Structure formats: C-alpha cells, structure tokens
Image (cartoon, rainbow over all chains, first blue to last red; front, side):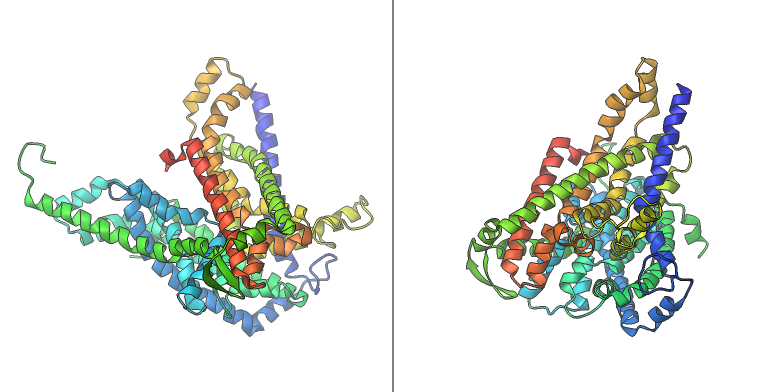
Length: 271
Length: 297
C-alpha cells in the first residue's frame, strides 16, 4: 500500500514537473535565450552570443516613449484604484448590511467579464459622451478593471480581520480616522501593497482594453502589438521582453510575499 | 446592544451614525465609478447593438439588422461554432491536464506546495502578448519542436500544422489558462480535512473510493470557480488567434475586433459582442444556480 502511494506521488510529481517545464516555462525561457542569439530570425541554429539587440532596444525612442507612457499610466491608475478599491473592500467586508452580497457581486463581476467586451463597450461609451481617445481614456478604462482587483484582494484580508479590534480602539476613545490609521491600516497594509503591485502590473500589461480606447497614442503592449507585424523588430522584442520578464518576476515575487502576509517585517523595518 | 437593560449611551448612538456614514462614504464612490465606466458602457453596448450602423458611428434608429447580418452569414456562423468547439475542447483539456497537478500539489507535496503555486503564478503576470509571441519560437517552421524532430530524424519536413492553426491556438490557450484551473481546484482539495480521508480509509475505502466519494465532490466548487474564471474570458479571446492562429484559428473575438477597428461596422460588432455577453451571463447564472456557488462568496 505504502509503496503504491509513493509510486503514484512520484509519477504525479514527474508529470507536474513536465507540464510546468514544457507548457508553462519553455516559451518564456527560449525567449530569453534567443534574445542573446546573434541572428535576425529567432530560430536555430545558434549563431553566437550577442548583446546587440539590447543595445538597439535601448536606442529606440518609440519604444522608450511607449514604456514611459505605460509607467505613468499604470502609476496614476494604481493610485486611484487603490483608493476606490479599498473603499469597495470596506463595503464588501467591513460593514454588515442588507445588500452586502449584492454589492459584492456588483464589484466582482468585472473580474470575469471578457476584456474584449469591456474594451468595445468603453470605445462606444467614450464615443457617445464625446471624449476623444487618448491616454486619459486609457487611464479611465484601466481603473474600471483594477478597482475590482484591488477590492477582491483587500476584502480577502479584511475577512480574516477581527472586527472587535476596531471596536476596542473605539471604546478606548479613538475616532474613526484614528482607528483606521492605527488599527486597520497596519493589519491590511501587506494586502494593500500586494494589491497595488498587481494593479500596477495589470495596467502596465493591459493590451486588450487599451487596444480599443487608446486612439493614436502608444503604450508598451500597443508597441509590442504593432512591432510584431515587422519581422525585423522581432529580436528587439525578444530583448525588451526578457528585461520585462525579469523585472516582472521580481515584482510578482514581492507582491506574493506581501499578499501572504510575510512582508510585515519588511514594512516595519522602514519606520 | 444594551445588555443590562440600560439606555444606549450617547457615544454608542453617535458611533452607529458614524458607522452608517462610513458605510455610505465607502460604498458610494466605487459604486458610481463602476456605474459610469463599467455598467453604463455595457448597457450602451446592448442598446447600440439595435442601432443602425454607419461607418465608425451609429444612428439611433431601432433595427434588428445587426443581429440578422450576423446570424444569416454562414462564415460568421462557422466561426462562432469553431469558437465554441475550440473553447470547450480547451476547457476539457485544461481540466484533464490541470486536475492531477492540483491534486498532487494539494495532497502529495508536504512542504513546498506554496513555492510550486508561486511558480505557477509568475508566468501569469508576465506580459500576455510577449508570452503568446514566445510560442512562435517553439511552434514555428524552424522552431524548437520542428528542429528537435528533424534532428532526431523523425520527420523530413517541418510540421506546418504547429503554427498558424487551431492546434496552436489551443496550445497557447492551455498555457495561458492552466494556472486559473489548477489554483481553485488546489484550494478546494487543500481544504479537505484529513480526518474524513482517514475515517474513510479505516472503514475500508480504497484509494479510488476516497477519490470518487470525497475528493471529487469536495473539489467541485473549485472546478466550477475555474470554469467561470476561464471559459468566459476564453470566449472573447482575439490576440492569441491573431498572433498564432492563422486563418483556420480565427475566433469570434477576431470578428468583433475587426468590426470595431477595421471594418468600422460598430452595430454588427456590438450585436456580436452582446451575444457573447448574453451567453456569458447565462453561463454564469447557470453555474451559480446549479452549484450554489453564491453561498461560497
């Protein structure tokens, strides 16, 4: 019996490793490897190591401009989404009232809506209210999918939060704002930082919605989308993508640590 | 409130008022924002799907022409059918491929399951277009798979069906959505109390019985959650088929995208979009009703 169990777990482990390696990681690793290949086409044979594509990437002004646009759009979107998302999370998890589950559904539905539908409906909407498409409409659109994301992450943390802690603070004479700042905030801080990181990366990477509401401006995903049509760009895309992959892995690592609440120490060491 | 029969003190009363004020202040801004920038546009999509279409604009005159144009066109019908077949097939494959992984992570890994889940999450956060494009290096005519098969002498000519085909779309969809299937099922299986399993074992249940009567039913909520998270967004996919799909991988999402950004027939695009939205909502409602998922939320 014991041996059979061990055998099953061994084979399932092998299977999991194979799927992770070939279906999840293979293309990403190859992308990074080929960004160092000294060849205009991204395929075998290996033509030798080069940093040429990285040099070219850093000298492309259209690319740097697109990256810069994505960064500041994501920064604005993250700031606004955090404020609205934390409010929504409070409405979902902190108060007890009739209609709470309705409100939860109202906030959470955008998470499962296909982004294509959000993109086309926002395009129609901006057209009807006569707002010309620009990075401003991109920001408005990103906020509407980032607020639910932040709300869901923060509400999950609030659900674990003991409400009597707040009541105790109130009984001891703290006002509502003091209570939030001194009791609630430190407890949900890791979730907020994690939500901020995920909201930033969703906005930074958002292609589908952006594609419909950006007009003639360019963000990084839009740059990639148009660059994909020209084969001569492909090695440059490889190089840029590799840098972004590495940065994103670091950011997500940080976000995950904080979401799991292990980052309390990191936050505390700062004050 | 006043457990001792004493009158409610003023401070308590004031706090109740503050609670209500807090509730309203918290609920109102996100409510309004999503009403403006999510629900109103969605409603507009519905309304405009009945409007007469000009080039890149719509005229407020009621018509069913957009729906008729879509449903009477055999090419569109074929693409719609293909989309559902592809997405349903991928969903089935995702469950078959993902369930054993979720089971392994939840019930067979002792210490490192959180790390392995993290390894599953990382790629999801890497730019979506970059990952789709990366598959070209694997599947292309001179890609890794063809190079390896030719090197081994198994084939003389590169396999052409690997890229720019429905096969490619399905492979990349599996890559894209596998974590969203594994993680909810993993969470559900992880929550199965060990005592139940041991009790069943003590009462003589074999491993298959334990799976059939304990793990499988208790993991169903996770499976339904992953269905909502995965099946519906997949129906609206258009970047994957445009990058790796070729003509045979064309999906409904491509039709909608081209109606909005290339053909300029917004009425038709809205009608197809709304049909997709409608199917989406019906599917969610069915899943929630059948499974009683609302109790879990």
